[in-house]
Length: 588
Image (cartoon, rainbow, N blue to C red; front, side, top):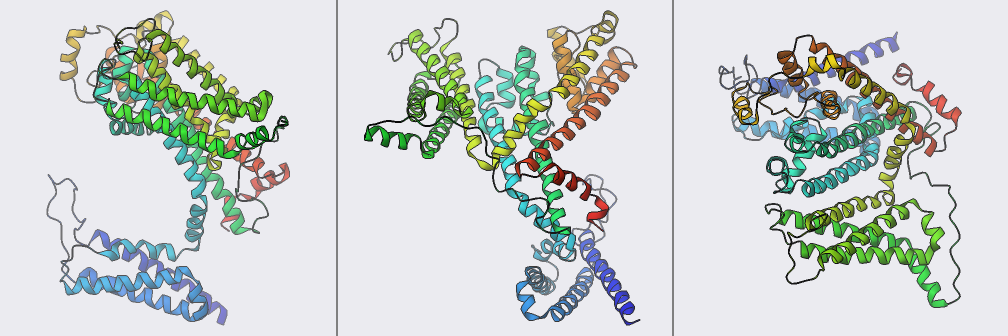
């Protein structure tokens, strides 16, 4: 009966402490500025009821007294020595002390203080009272390196596409796209960062897409890699880490899932290094085969990208005719010569076969040769350096177009750093595996897309989905300004139509992304028939609800399988992990 009494008292204490935590958190709704008003709109909001000074403070003091008693009981039960080792109880003590001091200051100032520090500390009471929350927080802490690897890859993806976008959408070539979204480096980064969340799709690509449908490839590629691959890989990493950590927490530690300490090393054997008789050549071989040469090459590649970025920022307000391409050519030539030197000394150190046995070297060498050929072509065509060269003269390609191509290849070559950053290597290899292992999924998706498009391209349906009485260019501006905000016409979505196969493909992609898809459905229902909504809803169910979620599931499965294999888990271990990840079993 005594133990029953202790158990009942323990449960009552836990419920009482939970109620106290709820009260102290809910005080924020009543404290000044009070949330006790019908509307949050300042135009319609009536003056809220403000509690008198001392009302919420009295309730808060009662809660702080209860927390102090709880701390005293816990300290008495575990003893002083254990208390000094327990970081959570030390934090509990600090938070209660700081909150009490802040409470005294607030009362002494008659509740007219500008800063209430104790408000920031209140969530700690909820966190400290839950052992599962503590375990979850610890899991998040241990997952941060893997999350950082994906965020770093996302940042690299965003920066590289920002530079390519600034090269593509120059002032004189795609003026409206440059003015709205790529005028400066911060503007370009912001536009693509918002596109990563799909919030400004398809608005961000409409100005360029209206001039040339080929520009849509840039935006679609950016979204597919960033939004659908990297962001979902972040989900896979978080899920996988929580799965493994909860298993370790609730079962025997370390028996099922090991922590990630490195990337799975390739088992591919490389040819032996060539043998040189000369001591000088042997010494050179040791130097040029050292890993530090690769690090130096990555640093030089980064410096080259920074130079390109600096020139782009300085020339962002200039048209292509006003830019001094000669200086950029000289800078690129110096870097390309170093790339050629790096490739040659690696061939000397590893031999041709050894050099080509590394995939990174194949990627690096191919781009180096291509850059060298383009650079040589520029010098032959424009005879640089030359004091009276004409930047407007060109043959097949203008000097700016060739320079832009070289800069894009240099930016693309910077991806060579990924395998050398261990935190990013597993994520990057998972992306490559997705290309290999999801071919069947991509094939089914392509069959689905093309079937719907062919269905739409039949004679009767083309008539059904063709917007009748499309206005002329001169009257489009008037229609755009007179239409209601957020409509197809006001947003300028004229390039998104079913007039041909390629345009239909981009329109269905925009509907799959979901953002603003109601504008397309509304326009086609107004211009054609209400039954056209069925078509858009069917495509939304097929693409966004079914295929996108299936793609996420396949990314999760692919990453987790690769993770388990990279930790040398046997098939039996992997299957045992699956059986042991029952939610009921973990939280029992």
